Length: 205
Ligand SMILES: [Zn+2]
Image (tube, rainbow, N blue to C red):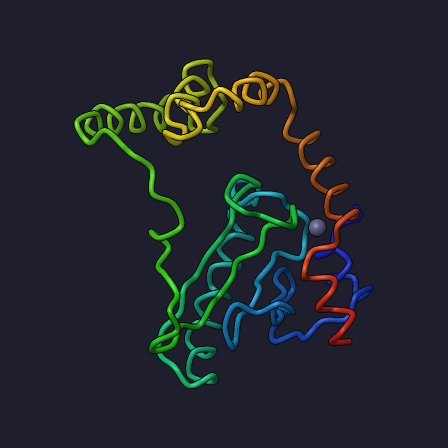
């Protein structure tokens, strides 16, 4: 597996490790959003959180809690955001599950998790949506994609995208790509235009 974080786990790429146990590794982000920005990963390669077996997930979460108790204090603050970009659409840059602890400071001009996106949502339809999710948890707990859920995703696209004629062609082509195919293309993009991560690494190590 040619994955940046797997290479870090194997020790093939140096990193500023802050904690490790048998299944979890944690290190400082080389391109930090704030002082103390830390990454926490399972040592085994899983792409998304839903792929991680429960025992390893518990280990991952107890490590996050352990670090949250310590990191903000070390960098002279009290609070932090704990985040996961779960999938490419959510901003995941390395296809290996990684949580972020981002310490927050008075006057840092940052936002909250809710500041990530602001779509127009019809609040009248929320009770119906809650029912739908409840039923899905009961009847389709593994979340296998249905035609209905795909349609729903398209309907809920941001307003600008729905109205824009120029994006229609792109929208029609996208569903034919498998997630694996998308990641391969994304990996190639990363190789052609190395992210800040690699650039920062060259300077720092
Ligand atoms: Zn990996």
